[in-house]
Length: 324
Image 1 (cartoon, rainbow, N blue to C red):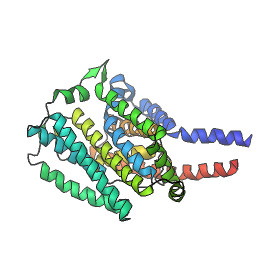
Image 2: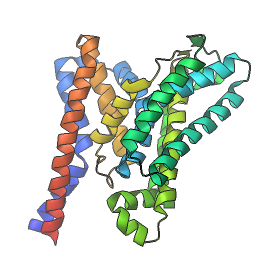
Image 3: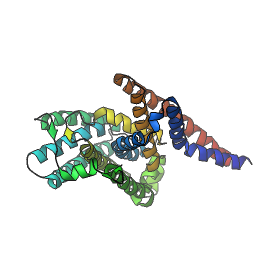
Image 4: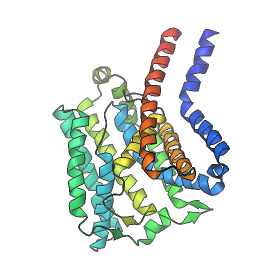
């Protein structure tokens, strides 16, 4: 009986992000029915798309007990770079290709410094963030650029079956990420590395090379996030993305069950976390909350999520011990 109860409790803990999302929907809808109107729900999902994509990159890095503080500013730099190249007459495909290669190189640089020089991820990516912030201001010489690419408009603004196409595009990214993390050697090695780096190395996993690949993957999701953002908001400024988006993405990953200690987290959990963050932001705006207070609430949520994460990690460890 005890074993059965433990299994049920573990399932509840695994479903905690979904339970939290449902509870918030119930509470917010009771406070103001406008929160769950059809248009509001579509807006919540649509606004969650860039958060979800960047949260996937954060998830991959957090699984190895690392962090990429440069991701938010990286989105701004990538978006400005794409807009500037298009404005210079390069065209969308060429601009996207150059931006993709650039962000992969940024991820490669982070990975090389962390894996080979053994400099902590926090310090390495903080330095990269500062460098990218300067590069963003340097590239954005015109300040504000407006993109009128039909392909971007189709993905980010137009709708199919009454649903914004950006939601379908994000769903494709999420599905690919889910397969990558659960069905590929890259994903399995990432979980193994985060669970026990020493054991992973003994098992023959090339730890150094894999850490480099993890930060390259982070660069890839930074690029995809920038693409989603400029599709939704064609007016590109150096302030697009930034630390606010990074805060939302990390909050989404942690709220979705990703452990900051590595080894635990799922793609779908990150998506649910992004919906929670978007729901919270939308609800607070509907309630008339002062915009300057939004970041305060988000910061409080991250702190609460970290405490909950530590509690769940402890509870699951006790359940595993009890099962033995």
